[in-house]
Amino acid sequence: MHIAEHWPSGGKRGRGLSADLHRRLAGWAASCLAFDAVELREVLGGAGNVGFEVYGSDDGNGPVAYLRTKMGGEGYGRLGYTLWREGAILEVAARLGFPVAPVLGTCRDPDALLLCFVRGVSRPDAEEIERVAPKYLALVAALHASDPRQFPVEQHATMREAMTTDLGEWALEAQHAEVMDEPLLALAARVLAERMPAGDGPPAMVHGDVGAGNFLTLDGEVTAVLDWELAHLGDPHEDLAWLWMRGAHTNFGDPGRRFAEYEAAAGTPIDRDRLAWHVAFVMWKSVVALHGRLRRVVPGELAMVQLIVVLTYDALLGAQLVQVLGGSPDPLTDGPQRSSSVPANLAEELLHVTDLSAEKRIVLKYLRDEAALADWQRSGLERDCSTVLGITPAGLLDHVRTCGSAGLLPAAIVIANAAERAAAASPKSMRRIARARCIGLGGAR
Image (cartoon, rainbow, N blue to C red):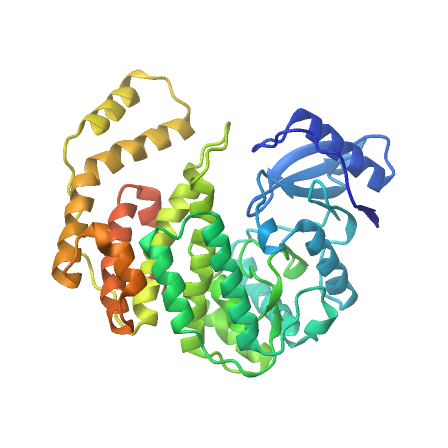
């Protein structure tokens, strides 16, 4: 395997990397493969990464490798979740017999990982899902049963210690990203800390992003388990929570059937209360990362995809917090109400007179609808804060931080309502929320 401690940076990196960095990455990949030259063709890279299929001189035989590097910024680097680290984890997983892509090279600067190309599909059809799901869940159960001391990750004496450390590190990440001024994120951090399940037993090795889209299948067999970047020690229920949550945007059949397959493979029952807490935890992790991305401008990139996901999971997280606190999410008493405004009118005019790309048109439609619904969203929050909490919206964040434990459920109900009103400006988000509720996420709102 080719390992590079340091590799000169190629300048500023955005969505598509700089031309110089792209050239240097191609040169490094060629050296790992012992080729004179390679071609990098961009594909989805997962999370904050950009991915490339790597082709040799004879591209008629398809890609020979797969390269991942950071899309821009630090990604999960502050949490220690680097691609360099993932490469080391993959090597251990391979030695233990898990189906993973063999590692060809890792690099620290820039953070990059080069893997053998593995055949398979990450979005199988419904028939293939049912054929392969029990085998995939058996692999997840086998990972949880493995000796975590074999993996190059931070070790912990107990499951509770591992969860406490993980929660604390993500709270620091949220503070660094300057997103803890969002009442929803602040509320979630407090609820997760106060309602953390017990865990005196030893921790397990968890993948950290289990579910549809993160493994390859071919002819009913798992050919590779993908994206080990977030792997760490913790509670196996976290992986099951990821599996459930990812089903909101990528089909993986009935979650209940998937859980039964896991229980059969693991030989242990799932604790539904622990699972509910972990669903809130993984949703919070996701929205912390996404809110952080939305707080910064990335020239040349439109963040609309991330915004759609944020609006979706803000609403789902709000409902999940209500459930963790022992409540039941209730339907909103008022539907979306549009009103005329200058920003909404300007956006509408631009939609009719400007030749826009499909992506820009989606952004403009959202800005139009968000402006048209702003009065309804604002008045709804004011009413909820006044009638439920006896405060104004300006005091909501302080209330979340200082109220007694008994005040968390009413606050969660108010914040969940606000998140759902915000999502109403995005039809795609509302469709994803409806899909999530079909598989049991987000309550029965």
